Image (tube, rainbow over all chains, first blue to last red):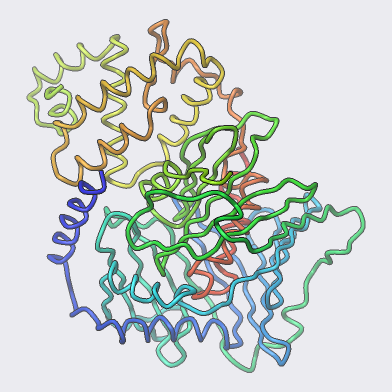
Length: 324
Length: 171
């Protein structure tokens, strides 16, 4: 099977070379551009309105990013449909669902260094994607440099990025499948960068301590693979495991969480005891995210990631328990 | 089998199309093959959404009647693997077809022992929304996933909009 996929990968790589525009960037230049985008996202003050497009849906949200001596603060409000608000203060993310009176909390343990978390992932990007510079295009009133990441096999999506010329801030990001169809797109429609962004703009509309609200904490602790006992025997090329965790849901349910990444995409695997209610197995999709569920013994395995269905399913079908 | 493939690819003339459609219509096995080929085609083109609900419904049905359906589903899986392979037009197709046949097992067996089309027979009420991206459990997982996604490193909390998207919440 792996052999066949590899052959398919080469066939695809051959095809994409035919459509090549600009010369591919060297590994160093490619990573420098991506690094610049990531640094801009982390260090700039900006506020704006962006649209998130997936399938035939378009949703508009407002985002503010503010940096001070305490670190990073971010606020995202959805403007369409039910009110939702996400607040981030450095490592803690709070997600408010005011209509249902629910707040979800997660503390991030990952560093924000891009791309990926280990140096090997940097070489994954260069090995599994062809990176090219495109034209200069205007987005939300700003000039931007187009950067194209073309996958060399069918196990990952392609990306087109529009980075603001002077700062590197990502103005637009498009994810395409192997048929070059857009599966997901983020794009600013209005944006201000710099001093016009003030502290008041990041103050939350809700509080986690509101009475009558349900507070869901999804706690996490780092573990080694040996400790979880779970492994993935045959995962797609280019992906590396970046994390093993044990999570505890509100109410004490234990969930094993493993994360793999190829530098541009991440795939998460969640393993838990079968819930009492009935669970649908199979594949579903939202934008670039594919979700695949199956039973393994008496456990329920949920795999999700911004990767093609074949990739997510390969992970799901090779999950195995090798512990005691 | 070659005829089915040719029909899908639009390579038959009008007379053959009518003949082939008549052969498919009313024959559960051929109808099953027909939907499998479309699933494969859609997968190759990256259009999964329609069949996601289809496979979900089929598997929901299988879960409800495990003793009746499971052995037959397994046999069909083996058969499908053999017939589907020669049909694939390209190397890439061959890989994905074989892969789907191997991994989807029960999911791509849309007939039951009564010979009726199980896909049509399943009532929508029997499907829970536990797997829907907008569902409660899934948004928790999406949120947990998002912190490790390189997209978050590149665009900050904007990528978290996936976790609160209302795409399927209304279902």
